[in-house]
Image 1 (cartoon, rainbow, N blue to C red):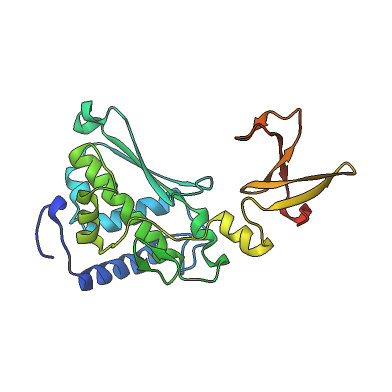
Image 2 (image 1 turned 90 degrees about the vertical axis):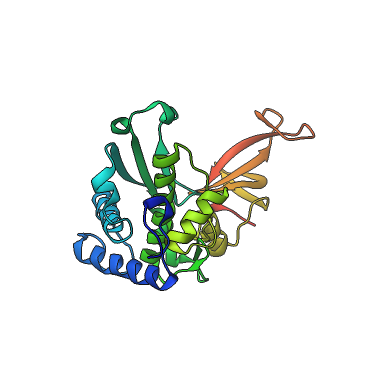
Length: 249
């Protein structure tokens, strides 16, 4: 470690790798759900375990000793772009230390579907070897949001202060992830892309349209003079939700 004080923490790259791997090994030994680098199941309690390991390994128990507020941890299957986020009160600048409440929420589906696309998964500029390492690096990113919010009552990963902090603490060289999204997985499996022309049958009738969105099903926009959706040139559309296997293209 090069310097003291949580906002000024800076580790050598070699130290960071050792610490991250130590946390990985301890986490696997303590978790009831994660026993390998392939995450198949996880609970909110696992996030608490992971947080306390980081507090010990990287922060020298800063949060245990100094934080007087409330920390919450949760998993979401509905997050489709961000793999993690830190939730806080918009009145944060008016709160006393004991009133501070933060929640780190992780988009667990990104890690469940880590292996569904065969390519490198880069997270915060780091090429990850498995879903657990990817999870740790996203978690580290959120820890820096937590620290910024706690110290400065604001946080933005687009700004230099955050980028400097996350690099000094965890050797991150970027602030975005390249984990497989549902859209990418479906595109690879079915060969579907946004804007593609498709058709489908419903009650014996054939409908033609284009793919507007890809989630659990395809959102298909079909021209219809009675439709409630309108494009830039005045065409009207109806929106249909169609299972991927029922699309013709």
